[in-house]
Length: 121
Image (tube, rainbow, N blue to C red):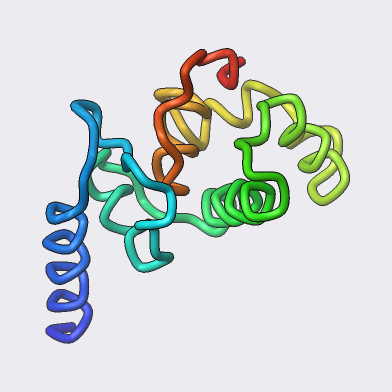
């Protein structure tokens, strides 16, 4: 338990040392590290679930391959393939990320704040 608490404290301190905007988005996506996801989630009071981690992972992979953030509709198509019709909905995304796909999922994945929050649906 102490090891986990110390690791979490370390990640929160590490997050605090990074350059971020006024809403907490990283200014450089290359500063992101998987260990920071838990610190981002803790800041927003969200539990880091498998479903949230899958979406964050998808955003990162998409970003690495395309050098852009996937629009929500692109993510929904992906969710349809891996999770089925019931999970490929805007409602499901908002259940996972109550403040929105662009505001939370992209932030947790280390993306800069989207210029247009058209990423949110």
